[in-house]
Image: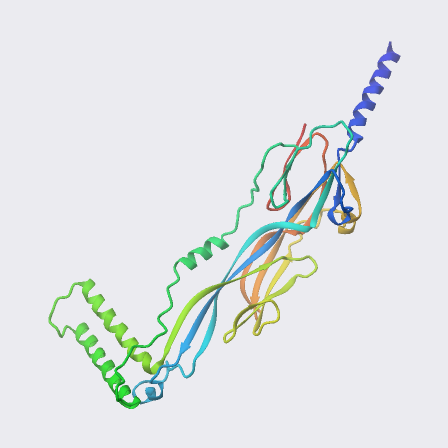
Length: 362
């Protein structure tokens, strides 16, 4: 009898071991998959992409039609001597964007053997894995940065650029010198009206709203006539966006150039001072004994899935060695790729980082 139960126990143990050893799927690095390989699918882990939004003020300087007579009547401090465009870098805002990582994309080939538990894979439309064995959808839990929201606020409150045109004058039979004299007299007249308004010359008790409206109209008229001599500066604010993918191999990347006279150009071929992004890992994953990238790429793994422990890094955006922005962020691809076994388990992944956020044994 004991021999019978011993044999049954051995067969049961063999049967259970057979289930555990029989591969349901094999995970292979994407580049090693043979063309046309059947019975499988791809999944990716997310990489961190940095979106940099540069707020640029562009000032178009327009020369006044009576600029030759400006020194005769006014100070030359505000004179536009020639037409040009000036640029000023106001601000830079940073946001994180998750995208599939080509260096962490894998092919899962399905085995035809039976046994083991169900393996329900849940993958986002962009290929990033979300869960396996859960049969449900799990959202990433990482709190988004406020870069896009802050940019929206700045854009919302931008004012329109002033008109590029100049006030019309009656030029019939008049020389430029005479037109300049008439325009200067008009400016003096407006300034006198402004003085009388604020000094109480008119002996009229204006309502505050009416007083403000009259003064602003006089002030605008003065600016229009002054622009005939001094010129105009039409300002507008624009946003230039650059996407940067931090790399383990290159910690400092030149992403754009900026010049006060030429403005903002993305890439390295433009004119001006370089804008760089420096990403320095803080070695939060240094204690993890992870497989090398070559080991990940060269081998196939049965009933195992890759996940990622992301790294924390100090990200610094600079222009001509002057720091514009510095933040501490989680940067996925600077972390470590690791393997998790699948055997009657449920795994949920953070779709923003690739980290396992839920692991259950069944």
